[in-house]
Each structure stands twice: as C-alpha cells, then as structure tokens.
Length: 252
Length: 225
Image (cartoon, rainbow over the protein chains, first blue to last red):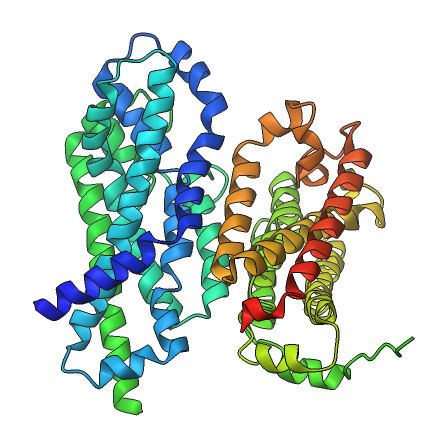
C-alpha cells in the first residue's frame, strides 16, 4: 500500500506541476465564454440543479481532450527515460505500478478539470446566475465529468503502450470528435449510445439538462448504466494493459 | 558563403519515424473505405472526402510535427553537428509535409476514379490550399509550442485544442470580423466566402512566422540538452 501511495503521490506531483496543462484546461473553458450569456438568456426558467448539469456538460467538451493527450505520455515517459527498468527491479507488483500511475495521473487531471468546471461555473455566475451554482456544479462534476475522465485516462494510459504516442494522440482527438460531435444520422457513432463519454446521459438523467447537448431525455437507469459502462471499459483497458505488459515481460 | 548541405534522401528515409508513415497510410486507407461504402450518397461522400483533406490531414500534420525535433533521441548529436539548427527543423517539417502531400494527392486521384466531384472547393490547383494552408499553420504552431515547452506533448495538445475549438466554433469564427482570418477550415467549409483569399494569405504568413520563430528557438541549443 505504501508503494502504491508513493507512486500516486509522485505521479500526481509531476503532473500537477505542468503549468501549461493548467493553462490548457482553464484557458479552453475561457474560450467558450462568449457563448455563455446567450445560453443563460435562452433558458430563463431552468433551476440551479439543471444549470449545474449544463455547466458540467460544457465542462466535458474540452477537458477530456486535454486529459487524453496529456496522460498519454505518462507510461511512455517512463519507458523513454529508463525508469521502467528501475521499477521492474523493485518488489512493486506490476498491477500496483499501473494502478499507481493511472491513479496519480488521473487525479491530477481531475483536479485541473475541476478548476475548469468551476471556471465555467464562474462565467455563468458572471452572466447572472446565483453563486450557489458553483456548489451544485461540484455534484454535477462528479456524475458527468469524472466517469468520462476516468474512461479517457484508462485508455490514454493503456493505448500508447501498443501504439506510438503521437498516433494515439491523433486518433484520440479524432475519436473524441467522432464520439461527441458527429450525429448518428451522419455516420455510425457511439454518440447517443451507452458508450457515449459526453456525459449527456448523466446530465439529462440526474440533472434534467434540457436537451442542449443530450440526444434525447434519459432515465436515471440509463444514466447509471452509462456511467457503469464507462467505468467497466476503463477497468477492461487497465486489465488488458497489465496482461500485455506481463506478456512483454515473459518475452523479454 | 558556405555551401548548402542537404543530407542524402536515403539517410532521411532510414531514420524517418515509422509512425509518421504508418498513421497517414492508416487514415488514408480508412477514408478510402469510407468513401467506398458511401459512394451511393454523393453529398455524404463529398463531406467525408472534404473532411479527410480539410480536417484530418492538417490535424495529423500538426500533431506529428510536435515530435519532429524535440523527441529525437539523437537530438544532441544533431545539434553538435556543424550545421545551422534551423536546417534540422526545416528538413523534418519538409519530410512530414512530403508525406502529407503524397496522402492528399493520392486521395484526390482516388476520388477522381470514384467520380467524387470536388469542384466546389475550387479548381484543382486552388483546392490544394484547403489542406496545405491549415497543415502548414498547425505544423508551425506545433513546432513552436513543442520547442518552447521542450515537450512534444505540449505542442500536440495545443494543436488538438485549436483544431477542435475551430471546428466547434466555426460559426463564430466566420462571423467574427477578425477571427475569420485565423479560421483554418474556411476553404473546407465556406469555399465561396469573400474573405477566402485574405484568410489563406493570413494563415500562410502566420505559418511562416511560427516556423521562423521555432527555428529561432532551436538556436538556443542548450535548452534541448
């Protein structure tokens, strides 16, 4: 347990210190600011709870892209710097190494994404909504943004072990656009299905988000299923990574 | 004046990073298949073809350019050679641009055999600007950012964000009196827009400035050791 916490702490500190990642998270949300007053005036009768769902969904448009690209180089970095061999020489089990790196890197982007969501919430408050929105937005962040970031983090840790880093980053950027912005009427996509990482299921099901981003209204069961599916996919990605690294170690 | 030395092409091909070839080839094949499957719907085929040329190629060029120099494991050796550092950058970007050009031209030849009409993007010469100009701009942005942060991931991140923001906010960019000149995808989406020529001129100039700035940064070799 001590080793796991040590890996998490080190990875978190390394990731949280990258100032340009903070700039990308918060700056990206600020770039969406011009659209906020229009949204607030277009939906004058929404409750604070519903607005928190809207804030969380908007906060899930860019931060996962940043998270996916930024987390992708964490294990690759260890391999490039030769730190992986040092880890292999320690008694730390492989699964603890993977889990520790994943947890530390994902906690760091969750911290930064929370800052982005609160920035977004502050923009809504500046457009006339009550400051209590920021408190509601925390709950929405947990239900809407966290599952997506956990999902993205797992694949961003696992896939660059198989694919070259830049290839993954290009494909991931394209994937995010395909999975969240392209309608299923244009081409087959996970947008609007239980595999959707957009957060619209949870925003619609638990926060009655009024259809700004959700394909249709979702029930609480659908919202819960979507979260479970995303977390299950994240788990599968991490298990597959551990098995792949075990196979590589056997071949070496 | 010292003679311009250009390393032989064979050397460049030997040290060229495989993912800079594999990714364009893979995406090219994917979009070839998509056009094949959608060939009965002319509008969707055109949208897919335009998306590959105008959106996917520039994104790929930008993100791959982020690792063109800073992630070279032999960078110290390269910088120790009696050659101006900016030549390293230009050679790497030129090689990448060559790959992107090959993908774009091959794709357009394929579209011609499939009977896909791209004339709304301009005449055959002008329509090359639809992928070339945004590719150059994103390559310049990626190179400058990667060299400034001494991290390829930073360059890739900024390119990905700019790409996505411009796609999601395309209406705002087109309606804005100043941002329209920085809109990367004007020919891909609004080929008949009256500001198209000025937009492409502005982006080309920006690309030159960004690459020149990246070359200037690379002169400070101690940052990369």
